[in-house]
Image (cartoon, rainbow, N blue to C red; front, side, top):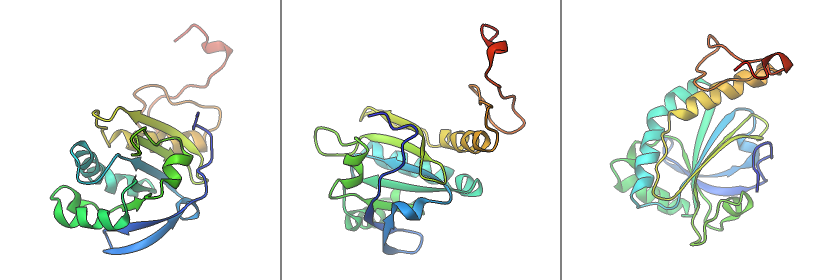
Length: 189
């Protein structure tokens, strides 16, 4: 299923908020109003997953400065997220909310459920209206680099504010050159 341009489906799921050390409910409506990075991962207490979530924590402050929020999602329960947070050096650093999709509602709705019943290793960047702007899906053994999401959010915000422009490869900030797609550029790049 193609996800780009689709609106995040409605959901209401339990989550663990490590910053406040509490269980909360998270809905699709809670994500509206800011840019959002959703990181789906196969399972708690595994191998590649904690390296990715710890790496995302290292980019979290900069994403927050950009007005973006981060949520991790797996098919584990919010109770397991808390236990993992309490028992892992890497995961204990996490401040962003960890959503438990134990009924596989959101993961299935986004076609991110693998054949074993776990979430694919996927990252979605959503705009403030919950429209999916970027998707990255990796094979289970291939970890993601979190800081690429900083540029994805920056580019998404820039394009939203400057319709008709495009951010080329290696674009990094408003000071970087953009493109205005049109007939005059055909064959010139």
